[in-house]
Amino acid sequence: MENEKQLKVSAIKNGTVLDHIPSGQLFKVIDILHLSECNNQITIGFNLESKMYGRKGIIKIADRYFADEELNYIALVAPNATVNIIKDFEVVEKKKLSIPDTVVGTVKCGNPVCVTNHEPIKTIFKTVVKDGKVQLLCHYCEKTTDVNDLTIIRNSR
Amino acid sequence: MSKSLISITDFSKDEMLHILDVAAYFEKNKMQSFLSGKVVASLFFEPSTRTRLSFETAANRLGAKVIGFADTRNTSITKGESLKDTIKMVSNYADLIIMRHPLEGSSRYASEISSLPVINAGDGANQHPTQTLLDMYTMRETQGTLENLCINMVGDLKYGRTVHSLIQAMYYFHPRFIFTSPNELTMPEQYKEFLRQHEIPFTETDSLVGHLNEADILYMTRVQQERFTDPMEYEKVKNVYRLDASMLRSVKSNMKILHPLPRVNEIAQDVDDTPYAYYFKQAENGMYVRMAIIAYLLGYK
Ligand SMILES: [Zn+2]
Image (tube, rainbow over all chains, first blue to last red; front, side, top):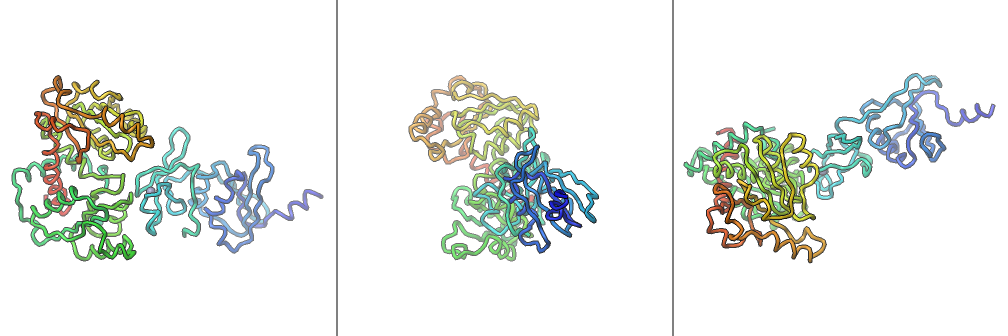
């Protein structure tokens, strides 16, 4: 019975559940999906206990499904996050995230003298994976930004 | 979108060699008129008299008219006009844009918003591809070939954009590199990794005299004071990396000294009178190479 009560608070009938987001990256994920501009019902859990990841975040967005390209941007900040597609309270699909080849908009170039930080230009990066580390190569200044230092551009769409 | 030259990697090996051949033709035929009726815009958002004069003379020697500005004083840019608006406006007037700008990536951006070919004359510390092509032209002119050269790069290998671009361009021609620099200014890992991937041999040293006698090309660069956090360290390095005529006694007879200029302390005046000094001719070559690039991008050569 207790279990059922918990479910009533957090379960959604239809929509998307993002789980296993490291707590420190939760707000970056919110910005990547532009959830602050979203009118759907959203439940956000922060600093939840997780056996696997220490403290995790979880985001449940009712009545909304995202394109794979949009979801894959999450892999830049939370590669181990899971995506569950919910229909009629059931998980109908589990998606695995993969690092996108190109990243358009969304992320700021880490080079302070890059033209994209001074003119209203949409950023474009190529992702480069080396020794398991992901870096973003700027199409404009040709410098790389480490994914651990990513700044997400809010309202970039 | 027209073909532009923003990074040296925008040109294939064949295109680079084609530019060098056309430049050699222009060196023998310095006055041309086939661009009469064309207008070249020379936009220097950051002053560089040397580079600007080289480009503008090149355009003039092809018969083109030149418009533009040498710095942003007395322009609407100081009133806050965006780069996009300046480029859009100039694109209505001219046939080709030459542009230097302190922000990195600015020329790439300009080439995307303009319908005209854009030549990058330097975007911050990022790229300066016409310098690379004139370096290659000079190497081929002095050695008769670009193949199998031993190139000793000296000075600021960490921040020097000319040495980085030169590595990206020369890897086609089986070179061997010697990287001579103080410990603070060594070649960045990404370029060494690039060379390892392409199995191009290189040696690193902090001794200027140590490998002088192996080189076909001695590529000197400026060691700038502002790169050092400790001024004492700069004073030490400045004197260690100073080439003078007495150090050249046993170098290879075909060896030539290149320098992107301006030099400060790196090369003593007495080197100018040796048969190895080639940096002034190198600067002159820049004009022929820029003529070739302008003509190529406008579809003439
Ligand atoms: Zn950038």
